[in-house]
Length: 289
Image 1 (tube, rainbow, N blue to C red):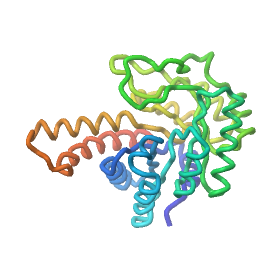
Image 2 (image 1 turned 45 degrees about the vertical axis):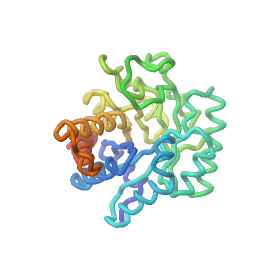
Image 3 (image 1 turned 180 degrees about the vertical axis):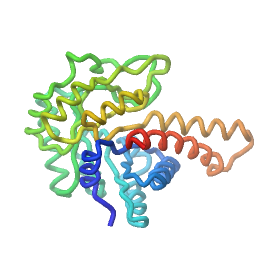
Image 4 (image 1 turned 90 degrees about the vertical axis):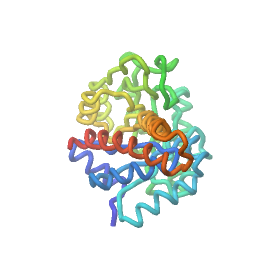
């Protein structure tokens, strides 16, 4: 029987590696991610934001991932990424998601605590084994190419959540995982270097809380920062924008190769190939292969 997500996280902690979390908008990316994960024999998390869930369907994407897990007896998991309402958490939990994230990063600390606590209680009432996550510290919201750092994103050490704040938040909400702002941003800068991660703060929060930490906005982060963040306590790393860029690059390459092609699966095979390159590179790095 395939391992649970909790078991995979415990193994990642023991090995000092991270589980790759990759968002999808269609079945092309899902198959690309799954095929690479199986090739490398590594657990993997599929993420779907509220917009991605609306496009694919909440129960439909749950069925797709569950089918792959059951057919191949494989540790592939599904996460309700960036959910902003308790009702959205409820829908994902009822559909059978393995993990949910309540995103209250733009709220005040008190409101984030209150709404996250309500989300955790809702999810656990539906499935006691579901893993719950929350964010502290705003890092933007869009997984796209950016001309500048998102307005309001926390990118300096003085503004990052401290280990004490993180511990207080966890004790008041009961979350299983935490995604703190540590210099990461959502999206990728077009013509500038990504902000550096604050490895010292990651280590402090990890040591103080003992929970698996999650790095959102991983796209564009340097390999060196990824490795250092994993060593410091990051156990899940999110990649989305890099996948979207690869998908578009593949579609463009396919149409450049044959401008008259109208068969979707032939065009999307090239997109799938480009996505697989990104996934393989990231999974090997996150797992120190």
